[in-house]
Amino acid sequence: MRVLGIETTCDETAAAVVQLNPGGAGEILSNEVMSQIAEHAAYGGVVPEIAARAHIEVLDRLVARALYDAKVKLADLDGIAAAAGPGLIGGVIVGLTTAKALALASRKPFIAVNHLEAHALTARLTDGVEFPYLLLLVSGGHTQLVAVKGVGDYLRLGSTVDDAVGEAFDKVAKMLGLPYPGGPEVERMAAKGDPTRFDFPRPMQGRAKPDFSLSGLKTAVRLAAQRIHSPSQTDVADLCASFQAAIVDMMIDRSRAGLRLFRERIGDCNAMVVAGGVGANGAIRRALSRFCGESGLRLILPPPQLCTDNGAMIAWAGIERLSLGLVDDMTFAARPRWPLDSNAEAAHHGKA
Amino acid sequence: MKILAIDTALQAVSACVVDDEDLDFETRETIAMERGHAEALLPLIDRVMAQVEGGFSELGRVAVTVGPGSFTGLRVGLAAARAIGLACEIPVVGVSTLAALAAPLIIHQNPGPVAVAIDARHGNVYFAAFESDGRALVTPRIASAREAAEALRQEERRRETTQLVGSGAALVAIEAEKLGLAVEATAESFVPDIIFVARLGLLGDPDLAPPRPLYLKAADARPQSGSVLAEAAP
Ligand SMILES: Nc1ncnc2c1ncn2[C@@H]1O[C@H](COP(=O)(O)OP(=O)(O)OP(=O)(O)O)[C@@H](O)[C@H]1O
Image (cartoon, rainbow over all chains, first blue to last red; front, side, top):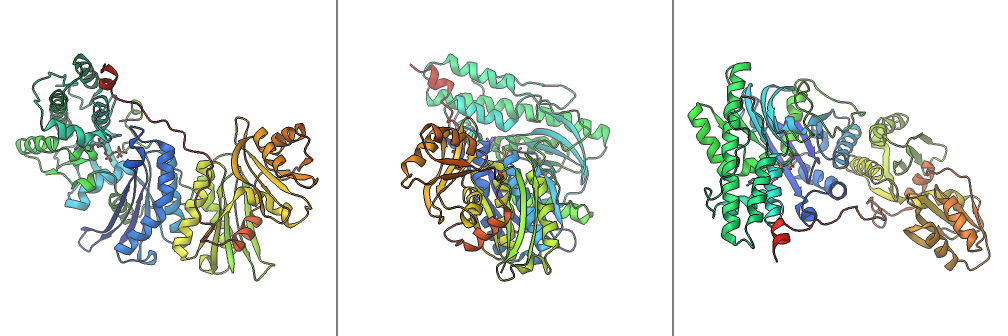
C-alpha cells in the first residue's frame, strides 16, 4: 500500500510518499519539505496570510517532486491524505483542496488526517511500536501528554494551560533579541551559559495531573532580563541556560506524572514517544533518555526531520486509517481546531 | 478539446466543461454563496464531470480564475485546478476575474469601452478597463472609486459611453459622473459567467497566463519590533 501525504497546517509545505511493506513496516519513498521560515522571519512569527500564499505557490510542484523522487505515478497510489487541521485555516484549505482534487481526478480514496494524530503515530512508522504508548507532544503550537491506545483512540492526560513549550522558547528568544525561530538559538546560547545563575520557577512541579504552564517562567525570564542593563553575551547565555534548565526539569516532572497516570488508567506502557519540534532540543532529549532509563521505559525519539512538520507522517497516518477502511468524502471541511481526544475538556485557549 | 473551467474567487462556486470542437456540448453548475467555497467545490466538480463521458481523461485543459477576489476563495479554485492539471497531465491557464466579468460585454453587445469594478471594501475597488475589442485600457489595480474614475478619464479619447460592470460598478459610476464622464452601470451579475471563463481559458496561453494568484493587495502584516533588551538599552 502506498499513500501520498500533504501537510500545510503551519509554515512548512510538505509532500511525501510512504509505502506499507508486507509485514507491516513503513518505508518512506520520498519526503519533500519546503520551509517558509525566511518569509516570516521579519515578522517574528508566522503570518497566516503569508503562509497561505506561500503554500499555494509551491504545493503542486512539491507534490510532483515527491512522486518523482518516489518513482511512482498517481495511478500507483492507494490513497491521498492531507492534514485537515488543526492549524491555520488558510493553509489547511490549500493542502486539503489539493489532496481532494488529486483524489477525485485520479479516482483514489481521500483521507483527511488530524495533524496531531500524524505526530502521534510517527513512532509506528519509524520504530513499529505497538499500542498503547505515552506520547509527549511538544511543538510551537502544542504541549500535551497523551495516551495513544489505537488509531483514533486517544486519551489526553494533560496539556499546557497557557503557552506551548516551543512558543515559550520563541518568546524568550525574541525578548533576548535572538533571531526567529528561537528554539535552536536559545539552545545554542544555553550551551555557553551557566544554568544555575538564575533560579527560575518550575511551574506545576509535583502536581498529580500532568499539566504544563509556561507563562510564569516566561515572565520570570523577562523580569530578570530587564533588571540587567545592556546585557552582555554572557548574560544572555546564562539567561538561556537557566531558562532551558527550568524547562528540562518541568518536562521530566510532568512526564513522570503522566506516566503514573497512564499506568493507573491504562496499564502497561509500551514506550514513551516524543513528537514536535521541541523534541530536537539536545538537553531535553538527554534528560528524557535518563528519565526513561530510570523508569524502565523504552524511549522513541524520531529523527528531527520527522519530529517537526512533514508529509511522511501525514502519509503514514493515511496508511493507518486506510488500512482500517477509514476514508473521507469530498465535503470534508478544514478544522482549525481539532483535539486528538474528543472527550477532553475544551483546550484552554486552543493552544493545548 | 474539452476544457474544465473553475471559479471560486467571488460570491459563487462554479464549474463547467465546454468543447471548442463540439459547440453543442456544455455542462455547468453555479451556486451563489458568500462562504463555504472550499467544501462546495469538489462535490460540484464531481457532478459536472459526471456529465462528461469518459470523465477526467477527456479533458485537454483546465481554466481557473486567479483573482482579484477573496484571497481564500481564489486559492480554493487554484489549488483544485492545479491539482487536476497535475493528475491529468494537462495545462492549466489562469483567467482574471476582471477579464471574465468584461468578456460577455466585449464579445456580444458593446460598442464602447468596458470597465470592471469589484468591490474591495472600505470604498476601494479592484478595477480594470478594456477597449471594445478587448485590449487593455486601464491595467488591473486596487484603487479608491475616485481614483478608478480618474484613471478612466485619462483614457477617455472618444466620447463613447463606458459600460461599467461588477459589484463595485455603482461606486465608480457615482465618481465618474462627478467627473462628467459618460458611463453606464449595467445590472449584470456580480460573478463571472463560467462559460466565459472557459472561453478565455481556451484563448489564453498557459505560459503567459499561469495559474498564479492575482491578489493586487499585499498580505496584511506588520514586522514586529525588537526585544525588551533593545527597548531597555539606552
Ligand atoms: N532545539 C530546539 N530547542 C527548543 N525548541 C526548539 C528547538 N528546535 C525547534 N524548536 C521549537 O519547535 C517549534 C517548531 O516545531 P514544529 O514545527 O513541530 O511546530 P509548529 O509547526 O510550530 O506547531 P504544530 O506542529 O503544533 O502545529 C518552534 O517553537 C521552535 O522554536
